[in-house]
Picture 1 (cartoon, protein in one colour):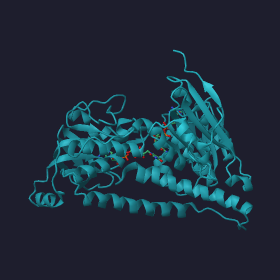
Picture 2 (picture 1 turned 90 degrees about the vertical axis):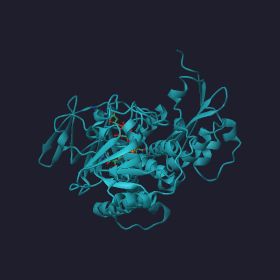
Picture 3 (picture 1 turned 45 degrees about the vertical axis):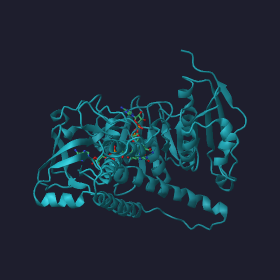
Length: 483
Ligand SMILES: Cc1cc2nc3c(=O)[nH]c(=O)nc-3n(C[C@H](O)[C@H](O)[C@H](O)COP(=O)(O)OP(=O)(O)OC[C@H]3O[C@@H](n4cnc5c(N)ncnc54)[C@H](O)[C@@H]3O)c2cc1C
Ligand SMILES: NC(=O)c1ccc[n+]([C@@H]2O[C@H](COP(=O)([O-])OP(=O)(O)OC[C@H]3O[C@@H](n4cnc5c(N)ncnc54)[C@H](O)[C@@H]3O)[C@@H](O)[C@H]2O)c1
């Protein structure tokens, strides 16, 4: 269906005056990365669109995720640069970090972004509802009071199409004393920086916040169940990251599980299974996220869930109920901002615009913004050998920036190549600027370029990135895994 009409804002305000504001072509629940994009593109294609948000316009990424996290990563980076500056001739007087300055500067920036999101939606002609949305039936949504609008009166709207874009929320471990722990939502608003932090979990959030707190001067313990951090990433990269943890002031406790948290006079004790105890000022649970489903009353609309999520495909978004769609973290598939945005965009164009835009989810690049960041695109070596004979090329070196300062921690780069076709299946890097470099390489991997294409590309000197086009010697050949 294609709805090509002028922007509906004038029409909407006329309808609102007449008290008949109840019908929309599209109603989006949740104004995060996916929901905002979906609503905006649908409205720009002439659909009558409304969106509900209960907590913060712009969603997790803007308010409690990517953006404030990256600002805090920058804050930690400045500390390291100041420490290294004397080796480049700077006479640096003793410096101290002021946590409250960082938090208020970050909050001002987030407020600015909130306003931009609201005005972007309004300019596109989207009707905004502030409150908690839930299903009355498959085409009716009720919006009631919420954290952001505690006094809002209950309203009902009808819509031909409804998109569930309600995101996810941190998962707390069910251990005694769990109420003493913080999760990532809290970490952005702590009154003071804890001197000692014990982080549980070595996924994205655990590693990123371990790097942030250590970089700002906290003593950090990192407790994780496996032998290596970052389950799911390339094994060689995980092993290298593991070596970088102590060099960045982080004490790793691999192969350990938390048992209970005890409050004591000067902080907390994190008891580990097997008997060890970590004394700390703050226990930070970075133990995954789960989709926001509970208040939606999905049963009223008959929407099926599976394992706590709505099983919808990224490039399709359909649920078991016609006219109801799900995008972003609520589907628990990629759980990244650019993929939520792509899912919202595809859906809006399919419903109201020109469908057919192609997006390559399989080559979604990923980055962990650690002190020495890790970034990756395509297949890990372990994934590739399931179906290919592979050639592995690696390069490990001290980045030039660290030569004068003597700062420890090598950069590691890796290409995973299909031995037969020479197509580069995966590119991985740990080291300064890895996310910026891998974003460029994601185009090459998406375009299925070959190792020959990499080899005939002339380097840009002196950079770390040029190593990706000068890896001439094969590190090893790995045959396809039998079976
Ligand atoms: C600490 C942290 C760091 C991250 N860093 C990165 C990063 O660097 N790069 C990256 O790509 N991704 C990152 N992510 C992941 C990224 O933030 C999410 O994948 C992305 O925000 C998902 O978008 P979404 O639209 O699905 O949901 P969200 O952005 O979570 O939006 C959902 C919105 O729905 C609202 N809502 C929920 N229920 C209702 C309801 N019943 N009624 C009305 N409104 C409702 C919520 O309040 C929320 O605003 C990070 C996440 C966290 C927690
Ligand atoms: N840079 C980025 O793109 C970025 C940054 C932050 C978050 N995110 C997104 O947010 C999602 C959530 O991040 P996350 O780090 O919380 O989740 P995650 O799934 O990446 O890591 C969860 C960690 O918690 C551990 N854990 C889970 N249950 C446990 C238990 N019972 N006991 C002990 N440990 C347990 C896991 O072993 C793992 O180490 C990520 O999957 C990612 O998609 C992305």
